[in-house]
Length: 546
Length: 64
Image (tube, rainbow over all chains, first blue to last red; front, side, top):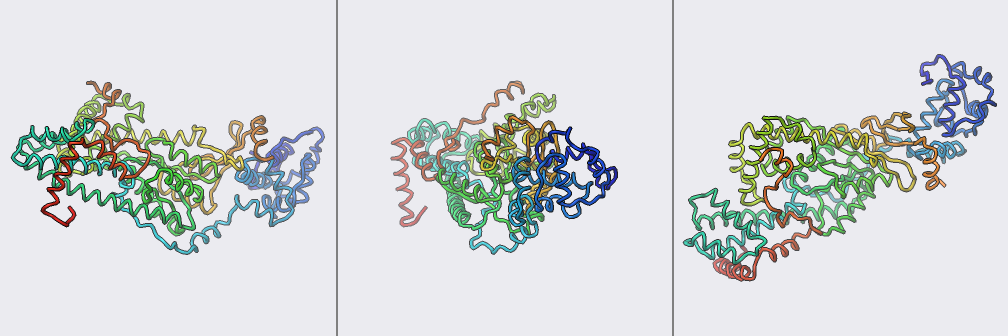
C-alpha cells in the first residue's frame, strides 16, 4: 500500500493513478498522454496541502472529471495533503459501498453535487450523527402500553406443540377416567381394557393402552381404585395446565395487539420455534441481550415472538411481515435447523436493505453439559436426535467408551420416554430416579451432545460467515448487496446492535479475489461488496441505476 | 444392535402423536374438536356423556 499516514516518501504518479481509478471506479485511460514528470514534482512532498481546486487539477491531469466542493470537503477535508489523498479515497469508497454498492455511480452522483445541504442529505445514511441518533432513542416518550411479560416456563404455551400436548393429554385422561369410573373400583383390568377399546377409535388406542400399561408397570400392586385416584389427580393437574395455556394465550394475544400499536419498532427477532426448549432458549437470549449494558440506555422497542400469539396462520404471517417492515434491523437467532420461516425473515430484511445480525452461540461444552443434565430426559433424547441429524461426523468421532455410553443411554432414555404417562406433566421423582440410575453415564452422554452441538453451531457460523452465497443478498430497491453479520456472544451482539442502530458501525475496506469488501469490525463479516467482474457489473447495474 | 446401526436408523422412541403434527393453524379449540373426533368412538361419546352426567349430579350448579 502506498499510503504513508506519517508523511514520508510521497505518492508516485502510478500511486495517484491507482487512487484516481479507485475514486472514479474506472481505470485511467490514455496514460501515454499524462505528464508524469509534472505529476512527480507535485506529488513528491507528502505534506503539501491540497485544496479542492488543486485536487481538480490533479484529476484533469489524469483525464478524469473534476469534483465539486462539497465532495472534496466531505471526503478529503480542509487539512488534505498529498499524503492523505489515499485516505480520502478510502472514505469515499466506504460511502459509495454503503450507499450505492457501486463506485462509478457513487462518484458521478456525489462529485457533481454543488449544494452542500443536498450533498449532506445524500450521504447522511452512510455518516449518521451517532449522538443525535442516541438522543432520538433516549428522548422518546414511553410507550402507552407495555407488554404483559409471560414468564419463561410458560412461553412454550404460545406455540401449538406444547399447547396441543396439554389438550391431548387432557382429553386422553378424561377418556380413561370416564372408563375407569364406568367399570368401577371393583372391576378387573380386562374390563377396563374392553371399555377403553369400546370408547376409543383405533388410531388412539395404542397410546391409551400404553398409558394404562405404564401406570401398571410403575404401580405393580395397584387396582382400578388406585388407577381412578391417579387419573383424578392427573385430570385436575392437566385441567389446571389447560387453564394456564388459555390464560397465556389470552395474554399473548393482547401482547400482539400492543406490538401492533407501538409507534416505534426497533428490532425484530427472527426465529422458528416448535419445541418447548426453543421457546425457553429464545426467551433467555432476548432477555439477556435486551438487558445488556451496551444497549440498556436506549430504551429499545422490540418484537419478541415468545410473547405474542395469534391463532390464524395468515394473520400471524401478516403481523410478522409488518414487524419486519417496521423494525430497523433483525436479529436472527440461529437455532438447530434452517427453516423457511426464519430464512424468509432474514431474506426480507436484507432485501429491504436493513442489517441482519445472526446470533450463533459459541457453546462452552462444560456449561452446556450441566444445562442438559438439568433437562427432562425427553428433551435430552430430542437433543441427541438433533445432533445425529445435524452432525454427520458424529459416528466417526465416537470411540469405544463413547459407544457404550450411547448404547446404554439411548436405551435408557427411550425406555424413560416410553414409560412416561403424560407428556405435558413433568414427573420430578421419575426424573430424579433416572438421573440416579444413569449417573456418570448420563453426564458423559450429555457431554457428547454438547460437543456435537458446538461442532454444529461452529460449522453453521463458518458457513454463514464464509461460504453461503445467500449470506449476502441484494436490496431490491437499490441493488446494494447487504451481508449478514454473524456474532457468537451476547456482548458482541449487544455492541453490534448499538452500532447498527446509532449508525456507528466500523469497517475495514479490502480488495480480495476480484472484489471490494467492506468488512464490519465486530463480526468480521462482509457487509457490502463491489465485484470487479466487468460483465456482471454492467448487466447488474443496467437493471438498477438507470 | 450396534451403535452404527442405531445411528443410521435413528429409531423413534414412540409413534408420531396427533398433537405433534404440523398444523395449518394455531387454533386450540379447533385442534380440540378434531382431536375429540379422532379419539372417541360413537359408543365412547355415549359413555362419556353418561359419565359427565353422573359427575355433574353431586356437584349441581358447580363447575368441575
